[in-house]
Length: 380
Image (cartoon, rainbow, N blue to C red; front, side, top):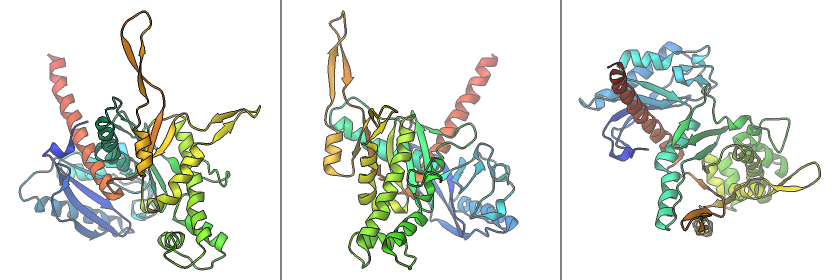
């Protein structure tokens, strides 16, 4: 994985929301222009598309003669991301029925255009410039030989988003549908999807149920009650976040049974991690049983909360030893304990998504150039 902070290529990006579009450009891993904020016209397709074209034209003008190499951004909701076609969106109904947004931008700006899911780009940004580099540096500083290349990224907000990075590469899947963690079964209410217990509405519903409050409070207000900064039912507020932690824990347990990677959490509700992460770890550290009632660990690896000093230090303790290779005088390294770190985003969700979009564009350009260089030599 190349260092994005040493790459001078420019990529134009977009933060697409249902109300506003924010356009900008990145170079060497940094935003290089003042962001351009324009209305989205979410229910008028022609107006919306013209705003997107206008926004990128303004970004290009702001670059003052420097040429962007690509466009790369996240768009909310279902899509055929590989072909750049946006499908039915709740926040942007103008795109219902399918709109070839990526091909349109490539036709107009004559540069590659990549559109991807925000959960995928969040995970990739954290793998490139966030939690994975942080962990690998900490381990190197501690004298450990292992490094990590796999990551599970989840986002907690309006809904429950996710993304996977495998061997430092973003996992998009054959159908642009990888990392759809929100569709896993809900441990709290097994007949529903887990997003019903991992979302803004879930926090509000659980607090209202246990506090018997008729006021519709925001998650931030409920968090303030949980911390004692605001009057209200503190136990009900804490329970709202802890119940979410249990639901997240079960979803992660299912992912970890198939995918071995570190875990990073983003999204606005991640601010309540002091209540959520302990419950995730408690659930992942529990047991599951066979029909004979024999207990087995819910996860193979031990989970460490590296956002705490003790958790980070325990994670970095050396469990590596050397064992003699049979019939030889040589030795091999042996890691006696499988470990997985869990932490809140070091970058911030929005920054991670932007850097993920930027890094993915650079990776695409590198692979495209490599392929174009190989073809002539194969013909010869």
